[in-house]
Image 1 (cartoon, rainbow over the protein chains, first blue to last red):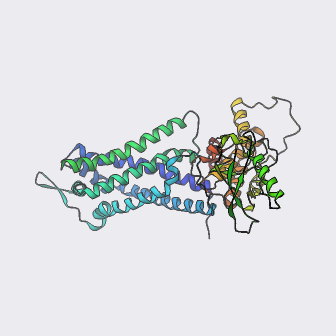
Image 2: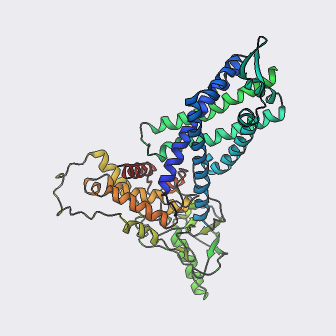
Image 3: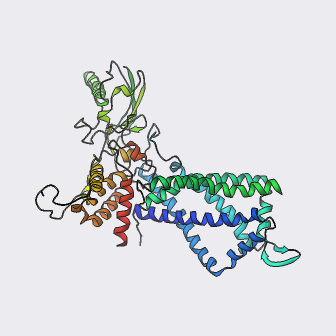
Length: 224
Length: 246
C-alpha cells in the first residue's frame, strides 16, 4: 500500500519538526554553556547525568529522534521531487531575488547530517553503547556520574576538531537563517504585523545560537 | 539599437532543441520586446526561414499569454511587468539577450518558446470556481464584506496565470498561482462555502501534475508581473491545514 501525502502536508510536518528541533538546540546550548560557567565540570556533568537518567527525558528522547528522522527524510523527499519537477534547467541561471540560504538547504542539511553522525559517535554512542566515558571524580570521590565534561574538553583540545565544529555550526546558522522564517510561512503564519518580527528574530536566532555553541570550543581550546 | 539574440529553437514537443543566434539591427528603444521579436520574425519570413514561435495575445499586460525567460528572469529585467510591457530601453545597445521558454516538467515545450500551460487550467477545473447558487447579481453592499478582505481578494484576483512563478521557482512550484486562486475565493462569502473542498482538490491536482514543492524562496513573488504576495501561500497553507483537521 502506498501512502501519499500532499506537498503542503509534507511541508507542514517539515516545519513543525524544524521548529521542535530549534527548541531542542536552545536546551542543548544552555546545558553546554554550563561548561564555561563551571570549569570544574560539576554542573555540566550533573545536567548530563540528569538528561541521561531522568525517565521523562529518556522517553522524550525518542520523540526527538522521531523529529530528526521525519525532518531529514522529508527534506530528501521534497528535494528529489523538486529536482524531478524541472528536468531541464535554464541556460542562464535564474537571477530572481530570493531568500539566499533557501537555495542551499539540502546542501547545508547534508553537512549538518554528517556532523550529527560524528557527534553521535563522539558523545551519544560512547556513553550509551560503548560505555567508554570515565566516571566523574569530584574531590577524590567517585560521584557515580559519567564525566561527559572531560570527553568534551579533550575533543575541544584538538585544533582540527575545533575547526570542523566551528565550520559545521556556521553552516547550521545558514540552515537556520532560512529555516526559521520558512517554518512559520509553511504553517500559515504570515501577517504584516508579525512577519517582520519573525524574520528579524530568525536572523538573530541563526546568528546567536551557533555563536553560543562556537564560543564553547574556542574558550576551551584557548584556555586549557 | 543593435542586439544579439540567442533564442531556444525547438521544432516540436519531441524534437531536440538548441540555441540559435540572430542579430537584429535598428531596433527602436521605444519598441516593446515582442515588437522586437516581430521585427526578427518579419526578417526570417522574408528570407524564407521559419519564424520564432512565442505566445502572445492582448499585448496590454493583462491576458497572461506572453511567457519568455529573458536573461535569467521571467518576463525580463523589468519589475512588475509582463514580457509584452517590457521595452527595449531596458537593454543596452550591442547586448546579448538569451531568450528561453518556461522550464518545468508540467509545462512541456510545444514549439520554440511556446509551452503548454494547460495544467493551470486543469488546476482551475479541479475547484477554482464557485458552484453554489449565489442568486442573481446582488445590489452593491447587500452582502457586507470588510474592506481589508475585499482588498486582499482583489489583489489575489490580479493573478493572470502567466506561469512566471513556476518559471522563477527553483523547484518549479505552482504554489503562488494556486494560492492566489484559492485566496481570491476563500476571502469572500460566496467562495467560503466550498473553501475546504476547493483547497484540498486544487492542491491535490497541483501535486498530481508534477509541480515542485514550495521551499519559500520567494522568487515567485519577486518575479510576479502582478505582484501577488507570498502571504497568499501562507493563507493557502492555513486553509489546507484547517481543511484537514476540521
